[in-house]
Amino acid sequence: MLLLTPVLKCRKICRIQGLFSRTFDMAQNSPNWFAIILGSSGLVGLVTLVTKGIVDRKDVHIQYLTQRNEDLKEEAKAEKEKAARLVIDIAQRLNNVDTGRFSPEDAVRLKEIFSLLNNFESLSKGFADCKEAAEWLETCKENWVQQASKYTLRSYSNLIPRQKIGRFKEDLTEYLNWVHTCLKKYGGRTQNTPLPVENPIVESPHPYIAAINYLIDERKWGELTPEQIAYLREVLKRLIDEIRKAFENQQLK
Image 1 (cartoon, rainbow, N blue to C red):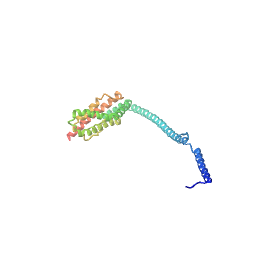
Image 2 (tube, rainbow, N blue to C red):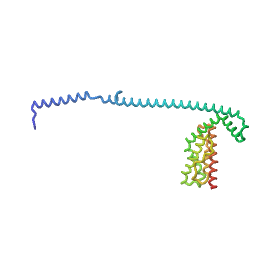
Image 3 (cartoon, rainbow, N blue to C red):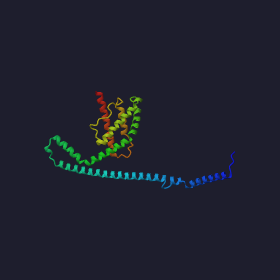
Image 4 (cartoon, rainbow, N blue to C red):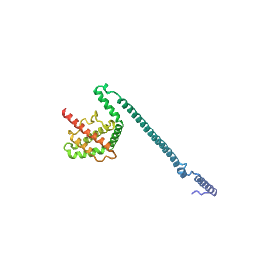
């Protein structure tokens, strides 16, 4: 074993002391990681600042969209008022037209147009009611199809075997889409609007009619007004008529 001389021992002790001193100084002068991470100017503070900036920009964008929506409403209101004034002006002009100068057929058409123009406000409200009914139908359509098909299967299980139930529900959905279109786009008018189901999965109209009648007798209409309910029921009744006609035409082919 190598024995250290007093001089070597002293030098070694000095090196150890120096190393300890440098280590202690580094510990004393090392960065405060707690402050760096959690301080107001640290990482958390930076993340908070960035997040606040994003939220502020979103708030500004939402305010812009809200204001833009209000502007569009005002523009629509102004356009509607302008259209109403034009309709009144046309109605007044037509009222002064001598119908004797027209053929009997044209005179009848002119009177119909005049009647429509005089009822412009009620027609406008009717379109609004139809649109509300259509939007309500869209929200509950899936539930309606489930309820109506379940009700119908109790009475017509012999006409709707298990393998056809899915397609039967799809047919009902398409029929209700037709009702939605007639209400929203055409103000409840159904003329010249062909049915979307060209080849129904069930060969008899009775299950479809039973399902639609079940919906007509529905008692839960949400927040729909009596007028909106009446429009919806009326188009559902016309749907039944169209289904009957479609099946009759198929039998004649």
